[in-house]
Image 1 (cartoon, rainbow, N blue to C red):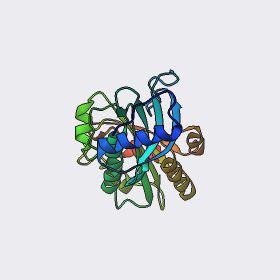
Image 2 (cartoon, rainbow, N blue to C red; image 1 turned 60 degrees about the vertical axis):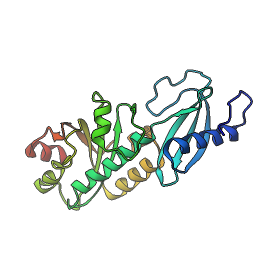
Image 3 (cartoon, helix red, strand yellow; image 1 turned 180 degrees about the horizontal axis):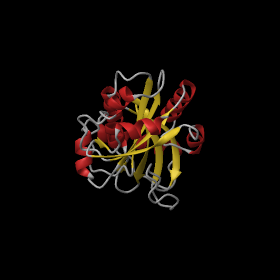
Image 4 (cartoon, one colour; image 1 turned 60 degrees about the horizontal axis):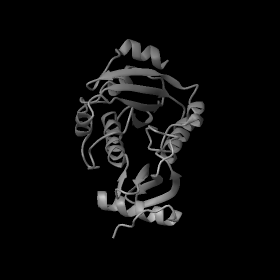
Length: 232
């Protein structure tokens, strides 16, 4: 039975209701980290700072604890608004990109952030093409962190130029970092522990960002010679 929200609900009651609504929506078990209070505060930040009757919780699926998200509960409508489905799809897409460059010399990891998480899709097992088709004006920043065993060479370019194989629906830009092992590990841990890239992360990688590489329909807009100049 769905509880009715009132101004005198406790923080725990808020969390319990959010958990119930998320589990009804996705048929998964969810953990509510904390009640973040009233106000609209989804990840994309639209409406941030405006006081409303809604409240926000921080949550994650018990099956995907690495995907942390904010969920907004609407008091009189018995529904929840959240970016969980989009985040799941983008998480799976990042792993697919990593598979596409598997074999490159060195270590790497990928993280994806869209301009906005807005979507009508509520199936977290949908693929990236469905997500793109649902919001065709959206674009994506793909963070690629690469720690080569040796110098970056044309072999690395061949792998990276193939990173969007079977992902030709995507467009946006690649934020490309060539880093040492320590920074790779710190950056990966930071991204896993935080739902967005904050100021500390940017400071951590100030000396390492190689540049941005535009891509459209899965094609990188850079040739081998320019890639090698960028990575030196």
